[in-house]
Image (tube, rainbow over all chains, first blue to last red; front, side, top):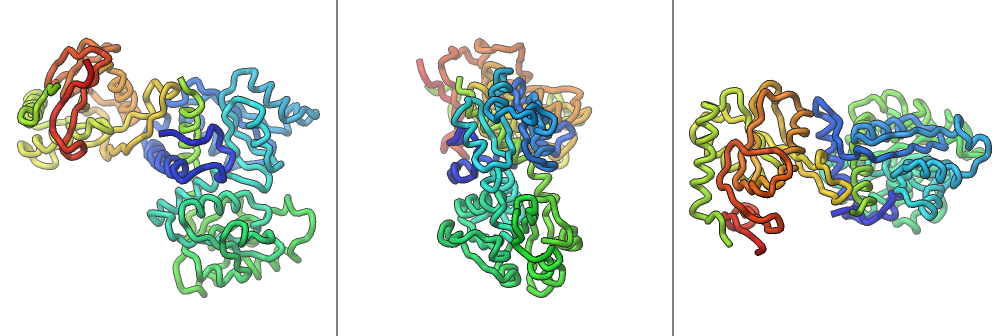
Length: 310
Length: 174
């Protein structure tokens, strides 16, 4: 058994068997991470470059830990300290790195489609660690893994994705994955932050009243307001956003049922989510981060096996 | 061709259990570790034979998957199965159990995998079938059900009732 794709560019390209294989392999890696020695030799002599054209804390540390625990050799690249700052093109940068014999590229880029472009031009396997407002497949996989851990299955699970849907690659990857695995999906937030025709295009529910969305769902995946991608005012102020759409203890008390709270991080505390919610027992935010390493180990492991036929 | 018949298998399993007990009386300071996926069918049987002789607490039993420690990921992708070792192996005698000892590479990987759980004082190996002439690494079993001279391209398949509907060992190929 192997993945059907050579690269991991987006959840859009995966079939349900691929997703299941990644999640079950991640389960085995989670056990590895509980051992006294957390390192396995699977990716010995596999060279991986982490190309981060956009800032990241969690994803980057998570990928680097995953790579190191698989015994891969890792090179890190940050745009601010590189020749890209001198005007080198993406393809030139990557070709130069590949000529130093690199097997796999983990890339984050602010332009949607940047990893897809690379995949057309180079031989190494590419993992998309977030491209613009398009996809962030490993985040959706770790979200799914955390939900399966909590609920046993995604089938029929009611998941509400809340907040800045428009600028969120996490939202799109999650929608693709949850739909493929048979969950019910609703998005909710201010109309200015929900793309037009999303309901028709993705066959999901759209609800502009956040309280109704909370009543409906089993899980609320709360997204960060991505101010860095908003070049025009889409809501009046952060305080007003918090009043109308922020997840607060008051809101959660009103719905009279227990729901699970997720957030891909980094959290804007007091904007999309209040501190006491983020730190409450309903929140599985830190489980998501823990599971991220196991899920990324699974992706790296399965793609290495895929990309090296004898 | 049948190498071990349905009638022979239970007595071989019983013999292996008794040999283990003879060497490690009462399994004092010893633990049993079955190798996933197919070694655990044998270890399940040996463990139930041991439990008939000893109390339940005396038989400490876990399962180990060695997929991530294989040396052939670039040739073939293997899908991992469950590892379940809910006890410490530090300073213990670990009795590894697998169905067929062939090239020795699986056991090499298992020794590496074990070390990530601690430092056992001793590791012993118990197998149902020992294909001695095909060894590629200097690894020998401490307990073996049957030694045989199958040639490398031939396949030895151990079948278990709970998985394959029948209990026997057969030789496939000329």
